Image 1 (cartoon, protein in one colour):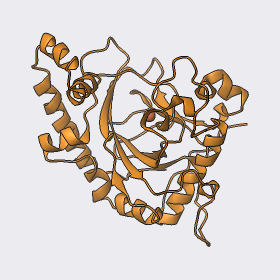
Image 2 (cartoon, protein in one colour):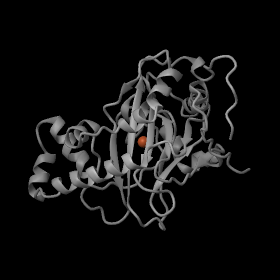
Image 3 (cartoon, protein in one colour):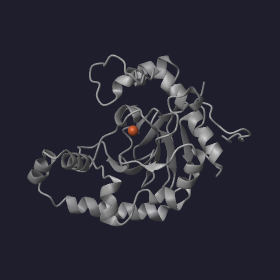
Image 4 (cartoon, protein in one colour):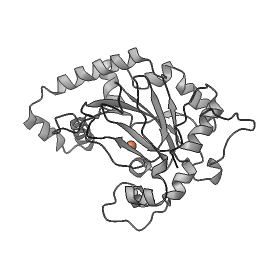
Amino acid sequence: MSAPLLREYRSTLPHEFRKALLRDGAVMLRGAADPELLDEIHRQLDRFFAEYGKIQSSDFERNMASDDPNERDFWQQLKLGHVYDRTFKPFSGISYFDVIRSNGLWDLVARAFHESPLTESATTNCRRMTMDDLPRFYDRPLEFHVDAQIFGVHQLSINFWTPLMACGVHAPGVKIIQLGVQETKEYLEFNEAGHEPAEGDQWHMSKFRCHKMTLPVLQANGLLERVQLPSFDKGDILAFTNFTMHGSHFVPSMTEPRTSIEIRVDLPAFPIHAPQAKAAEPAGAAMLAN
Ligand SMILES: [Fe+2]
C-alpha cells in the first residue's frame, strides 16, 4: 500500500484547518510565508551568529557552565544553533511570529480553536542543522519523537515549521507520520499519570511508550506507510501538533545545511484529554481536498 499523500491546505476556512490538523496531525501550507520576510530573518540570523562567533571558545564554554539556569540554557541552545524568539526579537526588531501574523495564520488559528486563547510559545526558536563535523551553532538530525514528550502534555501546541531555504532534497527536511492527534495518543499509549519510566527517559517521556517510535515498531504497526517526506520551497509551512510524530528527514545525499524556524503557538484551554478532541468540528464542515 502506498503512503497517503500529505494533505495540502488550499483554503482559508478555519474549521477546515482544524479538522485537517486533528485528523492528520499535520497540514502543509504551500507558499504561506512571505519569502522576503524569511530572507530578512535569515540575514539577521547570519548577523546574530557572526556576532556571537567572535566570542572565544574558552569564554563560550564557561558561559555554557553558568550557575544561572537561564544563562546556561541560552548558551547551550546557541551552541546548537537554536535562537529563541525572545532573544532574536530584541536583536533584530523582527519576531518569528511576524511570519504567521503578517499572512493571517495567527487569526485563522484563533478562530479555528476559539474555545482557547492563543498564546506565543516560549519555545519558539530557530534551528540550524548539518551532518558534517558539527561546527559551532549547528545541530544534528533528530529521530521520530513528539514535542509533548519534551515540553509537556498539558496543552495542545501547533508548530508552524518553515525553512529559510528550500529543503528536503539537497538539505535536510522534516518527516512526519500522518496520523490524527487522538490516534497518535492512543498508539503511543499516552498516560498522563505516567508509565513506569524506561531506561533513558527524561522530561515527559514516561507518559508515552516512546519505543513505539523506533523504526521496527513503526513498521510492525504499519505506520511507516504513513511517513511523509515533503520537499519544501522557501515560503512553505508545515503545521503539526505537539502530539504528531516527526523527526528530521535526512539522507547522505543531503549535503547542504539547513536553517528553519519553529513558530509554536499554544492553546492552553483546548480539551486535549477529552475524547471529543478527535472529532471536534462544527457541523457542515467541508471536506478538505487532497
Ligand atoms: Fe520536534
